[in-house]
Image (cartoon, rainbow, N blue to C red):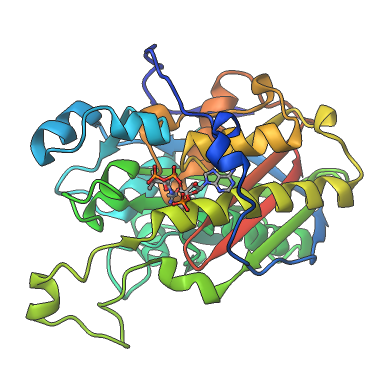
Length: 368
Ligand SMILES: CC(C)(COP(=O)(O)OP(=O)(O)OC[C@H]1O[C@@H](n2cnc3c(N)ncnc32)[C@H](O)[C@@H]1OP(=O)(O)O)[C@@H](O)C(=O)NCCC(=O)NCCS
């Protein structure tokens, strides 16, 4: 399989992470919040990812730049998240522009005629406009004869879009589906908020789905939602419930709001539970999985899952130190980079897990 992309090579650094397993205060605590769980899983095979493309904007924004500009505590972001830098879109780029660049790379890597693409799904929670959809903008910019729709599941958006696209492919109702995750988070975070802004970056990733062999595709997947936790990570104004007013904008209510500590507690719980469930239902062990690609939100969340599930480091692909949390783009951008490094081959088992606002999560064990 082919791929193209441009994430800069990793820089080495002396990252000292406070591993939660070694924190006695944390070890003594059981998770104190009760969250909705789900035991629903499904299978959807006969689907193949035939190419991947990704696009990260040129502009690198380092922790030092944000620390200097906003007075953030030096070293806080890296120590608490593992993130060293992220990319910000140019002022004249919208989410659809990033999505189109990633999609063009996926199409070029597959060598397919764009006329054969009949479905465009875009996972995003930072659309160019409230209306029309970003997917329609992508469809138009690529000149496709294709159905086009957005899926809004925040950082789980790519997994929701992947599972949705796979349904169309598996039924034969789509021959070639373009599944994209794209977000420009830098436009929705409150720039001076240390607890949110430095965690997020901008990017897009795209995969082409086509019919595959009967043993390819989602051997087991779960899409979950817990709307009761919606206010833990939200943009409380700007929709129909609370339309924008000048006063709300002045008081910064239009920015993304996050209860980071409780999102963290939820994430470490849901990620470990959903991955374990998928592995159990598929009847495979950690050893059978070639690569784990988790949403790149916080290295401590990923490390926690690895520790609880017994996943060795060489089976986990991370790039968050260079791109931060790119929401719906997170998993496809990481997949693209892993593929470019030769880590994905036909027949491999890949475990992907996205989680985020909604609350939502999406986990899939994919036979490549
Ligand atoms: C924003 C953030 C960096 C702030 O970090 P912080 O203030 O240092 O807080 P921590 O991450 O250390 O801890 C958060 C809570 O989880 C707890 N915690 C950490 N590891 C834990 C574990 N293994 N089991 C149970 N609780 C744990 C901490 O004790 C803390 O709870 P407390 O406030 O009751 O003491 C961090 O909370 C975070 O990354 N949150 C998730 C953000 C995110 O990923 N958002 C996007 C999701 S798509």
